[in-house]
Length: 465
Length: 102
Image (cartoon, rainbow over all chains, first blue to last red; front, side, top):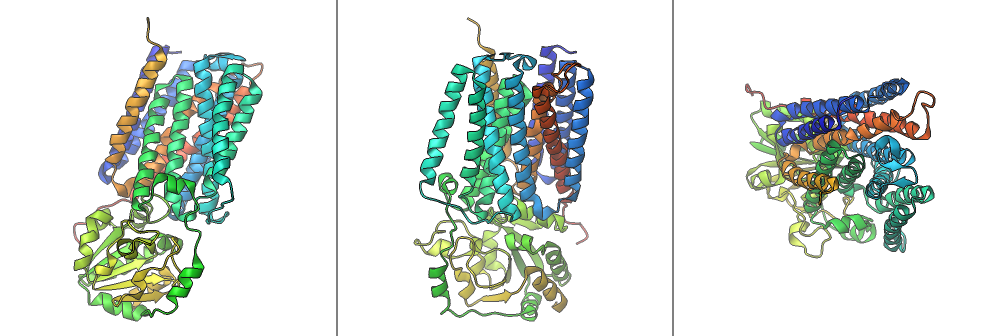
């Protein structure tokens, strides 16, 4: 058994290693080393915990067995999961962090002696407050992530679920959580503790159901943040520095990502959270678009345009992930490069269903990361490029965001695709995108629509090149 | 009067939020997905609480209600730790630079 002071120092070391793990992600070269620091920090934290408890009875064997079970499941998932399913995986993992926080809080509540927090029915006030906050946030993270997971997986419809009085109900529940924590702390009643958990699970569900499918990048980032705050709450209860540091890091990381995602859509955080956006207004857009002519072409036309281009910019979106077209796309680009055509990729901050989603898919298809550019880096290049190849993206290319103040997406930063000499737009149909509005780009003189499945079209173009 | 240790922990907490803020802004946007999976893995350091709970039973009664929750939480956190770090590793291994000969 090691002293409390020594273990506190080791926990501090692992906290610092976790900071270095995030620091490593500032560039792909240092990222792998960063991940190694993270693993090292985790090993130190776990080892120190075993040593500081010092109870090597039969319980230790059970703990190790459960680590082994969980670890094998985790490793299995990590190797099997397709990269396109990353958003679901991350949502699923968030739910586990939340649930683990809830369970740790329950154990601490049932057996405070083991954690040095006083005795049952007489838990130290500070610890009880921290514990109930950690448990409540953990429960919200859990149930919210479950809904996010179901929506991303397609088990649950991605369209927002709204009803009258929804915001009022949510507000009442949130206030009741605070009241419950107050009474729980003054009475130490275990019944109130269970009610608090139940209500927190409920509000997690209710908060996420009104948020639509394409707002998932914000939701995932937000739940990421919650899982951090839950961990920090438990860290305060356990007086554990590693947990407090990590919780704060993860909490602010998720908050920053949510902010970046909201900015990418030019919407306020509250606007996203309150939900209801993207309830497609199909009637109005359907009437308008029927009268406007579009030019549509086939793989042959597209190949001809690209062959005669000297530079091509690819704009991938969620549709590429759905069609699993990233490998076919890379093959097409390889052929273009053999013909000495310059190719780069333009990625909008909210392309895909989670931050950085497109980058991972392109990396998986062996696209070098120095050919992939963010919106600000590449937006001026469209004017000089010959062909823009839009595959699976829609709203993020809509020029309406710059021209029509009436449009719901007005002010959203968009890729200036229309400035290219010609635009190839791969899409299944003319249906409006997630925002429920027509894309003006479809009707431009220089746009050629390619109506087909993204993967099949890309393969056909490659054949024709 | 002595300062409550809670204040020290609170100071660490607030400072860590600031560290997190600056560190995360320096993360390149193309690595935002690995950032999420690795934060997932490290927030599962909550396993330390689960281990303490799991070890709290004595040999007569290894499965008291508190330790059972501890065992389950241990397994859940372990899924995340292994899954999170390994999937991050897998993703990061895919990020390659352009080959020179091209």
